[in-house]
Length: 228
Ligand SMILES: *Cc1c(COP(=O)(O)O)cnc(C)c1O
Picture 1 (tube, rainbow, N blue to C red):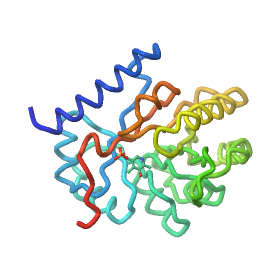
Picture 2 (picture 1 turned 180 degrees about the vertical axis):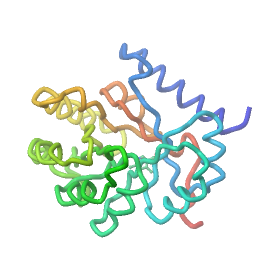
Picture 3 (picture 1 turned 120 degrees about the vertical axis):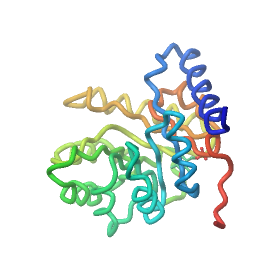
Picture 4 (picture 1 turned 45 degrees about the horizontal axis):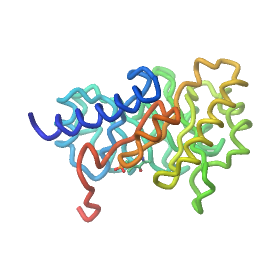
């Protein structure tokens, strides 16, 4: 067995274990393979193990890989910071964008999505633990943004995405509470089905707190080398 298969099996087993612990069904949690800094060949090898959803952070790097891997049925997720002047590429090339935190970004993505494509899946990024970062809206802004973004024709707003400080269990619980609160007031609660939360170091705690999509890089591909 090659090491891609081994590391993916190990991560899937961790997810399975965490699901069993919290009496959730194993198919309620999706594995997103975070492949930033890794070459196309690594993604191709991971794809061969059965992985279909891949997450990228840097637009140009992602576009190069999308081009190089056109022959594969990959579901591409953008999980990086969304710049206002780069939305067109995201609208055209990706199936999901996780880092939406302002109405203007959502409006641009919706207007730039082609009529012929499926709606673009969106997660609203929330700065759930009040980190000193520009990324993510404030928890208080979520209700209004959900209402506004839900009106946009070429988007499908699926839920929330958070990147709390590592192993911040309180932040996981807060994200879960916010996610459930929106679901309760949602006009179409079945469309609100994604809580994107948890990475290599804390995916089990995230699953325990209701994550439906864990974003895992290092545990699948090994350490990243940003020099290359
Ligand atoms: C890089 C990254 C990940 C993956 O982190 P690992 O610790 O390598 O699993 C997950 N989510 C986001 C938003 C990232 O930027």
